[in-house]
Amino acid sequence: MLPKLTLVLGGAASGKSLWAETLVTQTARPRVYVATAQAFDEDMHAKIKEHRTQRGPDWRTIEAPLDLTPALAGVAGDDVVLLDCATLWLSNHLLADHDLTAQTDTLMAALHVCPAPVVVVSNEVGLSGVPENALARQFQRAQGRLNQRLAAEADLVVQVIAGLPLVLKGSLP
Image (cartoon, rainbow, N blue to C red; front, side, top):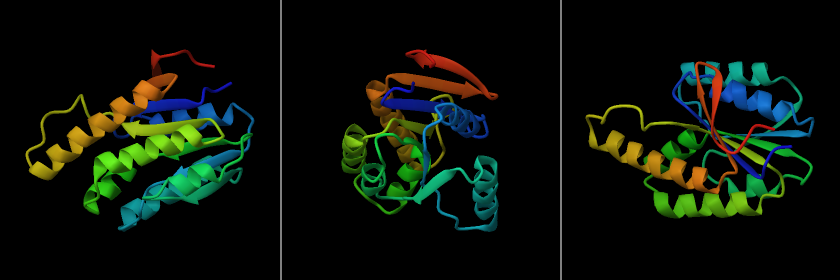
């Protein structure tokens, strides 16, 4: 049984999304994939296609690159939600020059009222160096704050490294 909120952290290509998908699949609940990615180039189109193929047909996909509130409110209590990923969602808002604090507050409120358990995938940026440009530094700070807020609210927090889970908070079901 998954808790109300699970946070799965990891670096780029750490296996966090696949691990989170496996966690969600093990619940045997109807699965909802909330996708935040936007495909602006061929590489991203290919990555999205690969993820869809990997998940298979047993997922309902909701594309929500910016407004997660309707996506999270529109699921049933017997569903399980995989939100992949908070990093791209944050990037979308940063590049649209939105108020990141207000957007994060809105996300946290949507997670609280979502009737289904939610697994959020996010990139851990605290292990990397300080970026060389102002936009990248702004993103790193905002991502760190978002991850800290999510982790504070989550009952289960797992960091995935090389495909292997390391439980930081709570216990695996």
